[in-house]
Length: 413
Image 1 (spheres, rainbow, N blue to C red):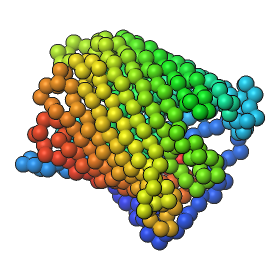
Image 2: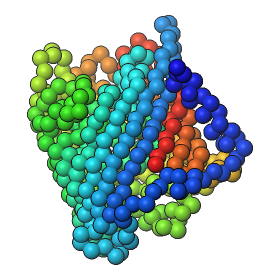
Image 3: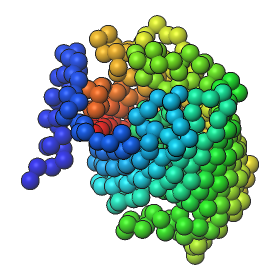
Image 4: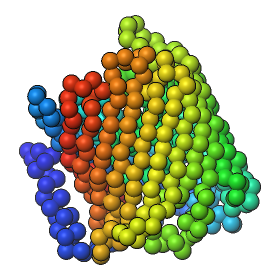
């Protein structure tokens, strides 16, 4: 039987040949799409992340991991294939259900000695229900409102930072590297509701409330061991966001550029949780509050057809209960950096997660630098080679640094 490596290496070589020759390949839409009702949409996505890491220092060692995700979801709504300007009230509403299955080795970071996973997909293996919700989407009016309710996670609307989707390391891909046990960060979900007020010039004000008592039970409903204890509590988030460069949302501009819209985002959170555990170690329950913010804006550079620079950070106001006392991150995205590859994207990102001295007094911080390059093979297939350096792994200075290389392979149908 062929191993994962034996199966994937020929594929990567073929995709690499397409890139080197500068070939532009577009998939035949009939291969990926079948006729379906106008009120129905589905998504099916396969993502794989093979990564090899090596620690430096006196006890040099290496480890590797292959982890993959199959994501399947459906959306039902009468407005899915209509122009927003033509929507009736019913067209604003839709129903969404999504499942994700993870397989492979999610413990590469533990093998190498870092706190945070080197892979976005590093979640407890098994099948997860990751969304079941009813949503109202705002229209094109000057003032409108939105709502989502059901079993949801927080970073798909509130705390969403689109530029982070271009990074693989979990601490870069997760908004503000939220690390509080039991918070509904995907694939975790919780019963909750999000309400937004939208103004064309003043931006969006959103409020979210999440009931955390069933977070562990929902994660384990389909047989997954979520590796967190049961808990009781709630979480509230208040956030304001604004696109200060409205020209970058123009449809004509977006036909040639795929980078996320510029955004300014600021918010605060207040939560309280009680973990059902007999462990003596402090896992960070109790009252948690903090503030956060991010900015993404266009940047003129001598390289690339379009560029973004971004910065984000968070500060805990209750360090005694939050595993992170503060977090800082930033990076640059550049589209079309290499001539003849207009849709490829170069990404450089870094962060610094400072650990709570109340919870982990012997740990200082852990940092990450990641460089990757998204190769657009065709519309439905991407390969994203990457290199990472983990600085001060585990925050304990026992390992000097970790170097890692790998790729993310993304096929969507």
